[in-house]
Image (cartoon, rainbow, N blue to C red):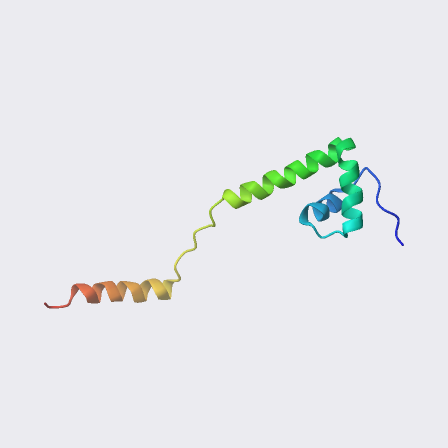
Length: 84
């Protein structure tokens, strides 16, 4: 059995804790020590802030591929050439 990690915790371990990928035993052990570890609290707060910022950022706009834009342009031009 591996010994449980002790403070100071690495940023990688805290990121794994934050992501919920650690075993229940390790997660409970870390959680029981977080109140006494200001550095760990700052790292976890930074992870939460980053997650919130990413969630509130709209996805980047992507350019329409040239072939699609050309087909759309022809379609629009064709709509203008219909006789009623």
